Image (cartoon, rainbow, N blue to C red; front, side):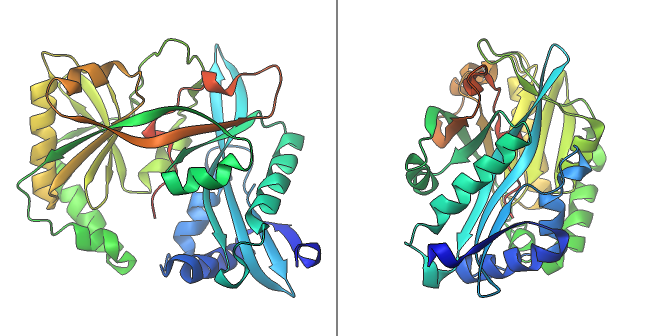
Length: 311
């Protein structure tokens, strides 16, 4: 079967095949415009689509999703891929298609100058990447804070046709908060390549119900989903931590969410402050695959804020 497949690059016209594979694999419907936005790297960098599809007899049977990421150090920029969605038609699972697509994806982006790939893995997704010689680093730290909210916001995240109402509810809840374009970032020793957070990239992320808020002296990146997700924070101290947490609780309650989930790089200075107030749990596995002998991909500063949007 493998020798009969045809591998094609993702295009705007082929997005519908990704949608179909997602439905078959996960029984989940995602609008075409959402998928096109997610995989359109031209919204913030020079590479539009770098993902691949596999076809057999003209029908899509596999997809390996990668989105381009730009990292910067001392004004020098590099390209790195973030692997995200991967789907195989149920009829063809267990036949090695995932590995074939992944290896061909890597070959093609190496030719484009990419230094490597990274991902935030669950236990299940990491299992498949071990066969591709990935390395791992520390797990992301996760802090959960319960809120006495109604829980009604969950329905907006479950059904895409309610997106217009979801947006209105978010905007209404944010009226008493100060929004910012100051991307939260903290310097971490040994991780000196930082994501290039251009205005275009911020606009790209905000399209996925994300916002940056200024709370006191802190800048907090938030994604509105079934829970209030915090993926980055800067300037958190013992003196302002209570204020920040209380303001986040107020926001979560206002939108109808019952939980705040904060996920940070384990070396982030805010982790030690939060651990005094909230139990820390291990979350996603930080995984890497290096393509370049003159670059150590473990020097990337990886934060939950840069994880592909959960659709």
